Amino acid sequence: MFADTTSSTTFTDPWAFNAHPEVWALVAFFIGAYIYMARVIGPKAVPAGQPPVTRRQMTYFTAAVALFWFAADWPVHDIGEGYLYSVHMFQHLVFSYVVPPLALMSIPTWMARTIIGDGRSYRVFRFLTTAVIAGVIFNVVVMILHIPGMVNTSTENGPLHYGLHLLVVTTAALMWCPVIGPFEELRLSHLGKCIYLFLMSVVPTVPAGWLTFAEGTVYKHYNTPVRVWGLSPTEDQQIAGAIMKIGGGMFLWSIVVFLFFRRFSRNFEQENTYVRSGRLPAAEITGNDETTLTYEDVTAAFDRTDPPQPASPSPPLQP
Image 1 (cartoon, rainbow, N blue to C red):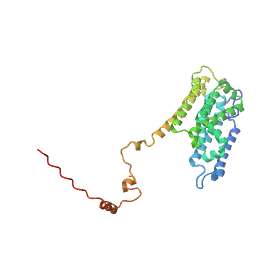
Image 2 (image 1 turned 135 degrees about the horizontal axis):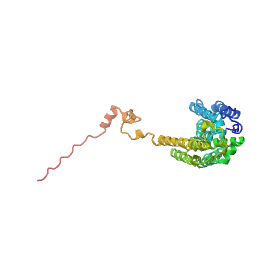
Image 3 (image 1 turned 180 degrees about the horizontal axis):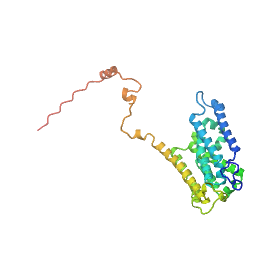
Image 4 (image 1 turned 120 degrees about the vertical axis):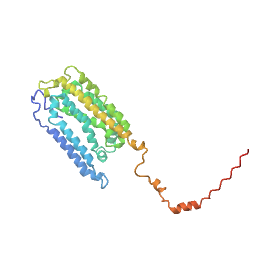
């Protein structure tokens, strides 16, 4: 993910192992910081008897770190950096659409408030995670990352490549905050989430379509004589466009469908059926929610009621 250690002008074996200690250090930092927050700060930040981090949040964190490590280390990083742009696109897909939401779902609210605070930093964070601002920032970064000059330069410049991938993860996390962020007050409504995620899937189709139908080699860096899996530069570009459009778009659309049916199909069966549930309400059983109706109450009520008077006979009909 970080240093350019797999330039095609240096290595001829795309599957040669290359160590990436900077990735290992970053993964170790994430794990250590999360454990420290959960075990040292967490018990002081939550009520007594409440776990600082749930089992589900731990599962999300483990999945986020594991997928980040997989996409940032050998061999995915080395193939994507020096030989196949489609694998590089797969890296961006993981860093944009998979790792950030998993990481956000692993962060409890108390942990987020401890890190961000309640003052100026919170106000800045709230502004940056506004749906319009976060969406625009993310999509602008996506467009910039697909400029041929930027791609060709970053693959030959380790610090620039590191900064761009860090920018991808950061802006993607901001983009996901209105949907699944740790601050509930900053999230959109269910319908707002559906519209927001649909719009997030539209802009990336522009570079995806361009890559799919472009003639010739768009990114000169990947026009190397060493071909992985026998893919030509044009085929590699077309697969990259398909990954971006189908992989990213379908992933977001599936979330939109899930959110839509989860919200608007809730209690649909119960609200549109004539079948009684197995348990009657207490009011239908006792006649009163607070006081039990007894035989003596019924008798006293009858005693206080005047008996009905006989009806007056109707006058006879005149011939």
